[in-house]
Image (cartoon, rainbow, N blue to C red; front, side, top):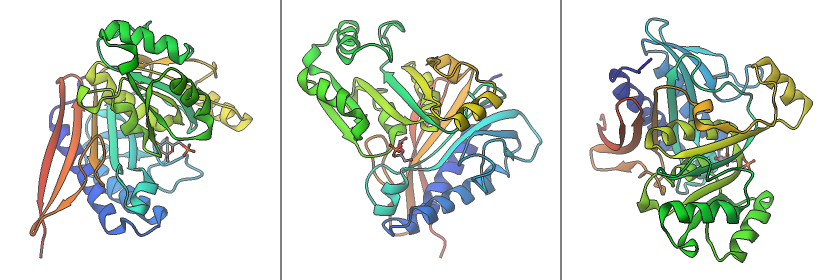
Length: 316
Ligand code: VTB
């Protein structure tokens, strides 16, 4: 099922409004309130859409999140059936501290086309378009992935740059990169944006990897698919509780490596609006009588991947 173009503007508006709702909370050191504002805004607006939406990636599971929990139905119940993945405020720390990189994100696909998994960590790797699917693998060494990448892209090995979350768990990868003389861009949070830095040459990232949030991996996969980029993910179900939840959602192989088209199938539409200026998207700018917001939109069936600038009048 292809997603109708009319939903592009509707989704852009939803992430724009969620982003704007965070603005008053920037730098106030309260990530819970900032997240609540974005979640409230996103939920209210999703419920105005003429869709039968099912949240597959949300703010948590039913017993832990009051809004936009996994399994929550959204929309007027009138219209196409969509799977909906949301991260109303990706980079809650960034927003709380008014640091670069906070975004508001949503992705939709046709029913049952986004993977259904409990919230857990995920090992992930993303890479640019035009590379053979078998050349890059979560289980290859960094050296092997990078030399395959260098060969495919016709680039010098030493000129490659990787991006990874700055976490102690990544010490081995970061040390290996150093020993290979590979430049590393460390990010403190926000690995949806991190994973998407491989989409365009201008970001100067050849490989994103490491362990981060599973939901963030699924969201990034949607945009990566439209860009024709590569992605692999493996959920980390390391407790009995997670295994039980995964099982309930139809997952029996807990160590499975998912290819991009096993995470996102068919058409998908992705929107991310910048809140604070980041590497991927500009943040909210206040002009005398306008709010200017930038949104990255990708829509697979329409081959759309672009930044849309919105100007919203400030009502007196
Ligand atoms: C990432 C990042 C998020 O969590 O998924 C990360 O994208 C992973 O978790 O912005 P840890 O912080 O536990 O390592 C965030 O940083 C916050 O949700």
